[in-house]
Amino acid sequence: MSELVIKDLHVSVDGNLILKGVDLTVRKGEIHALMGPNGSGKSTLAYSLMGHPQYEVEQGEVWFKGENVLEMAPDERARLGLFLAFQYPVTIPGVSLANFLRSTLNAKRGANNGGEPISIPEFRKHMMQKLNLLEMDPSFAGRYVNEGFSGGEKKRAEVLQMAVLQPEIAILDETDSGLDIDALRIVAEGVNRLVGPAMGALLITHYQRILQYIQPEKIHIMVGGRVVMEGGRELAEKLEAKGYDWVREKVGADVS
Image (cartoon, rainbow, N blue to C red; front, side):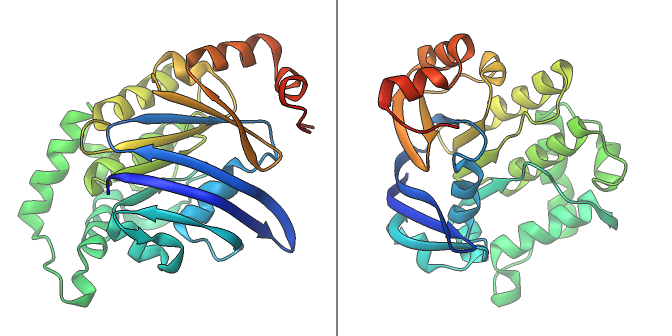
């Protein structure tokens, strides 16, 4: 019930089959890293799990908490406990991060469908707890969503959103993309503070450098739209030393 279980998932984009039978399980309380070269299907998997309409599921199942999430709308998946941190977070001019976070939290609670909305005092207390947990300046919440943010600030805003919404499984699509070493460390520390018994994470990345700060229980390597290899940190170290050609030689897969 506390596992995200992906079974034989096939997904196409604009008529082109990208995922060709993905099998993957992520449990609450665990961090899993999904690595692979450009075009291998990593981001396609992330968007498919959250129900992006551009991605057409051709075959397979995705189970979480007794539900096949592929039969659910994106907002239903979020309320069930799934969360996606985007590789390229969008800017929302004129909307403060605090107001955005309160709106998303109320949407998760189903406030538009009879659920109980969070009061402003209760939300402020909740948000301050998360800002303190992540060691973020409270003034950050008063800024417009991602407007004028650096790459690191955009990713920290995503981590703050994850903290406020408290999902059970978080999918982090290339959280390390475009970050310098200091920003990477800060964002990774935030993720480490959030993942625990009540939350698991699927960390999607090209490189092993973020794994110097976030220690996954398992690493999955995706090439050609499939997970072709699984193991521990040694896999990331081999990729760093040998590149993805080593995977091609090992499993006979096309990783170009």
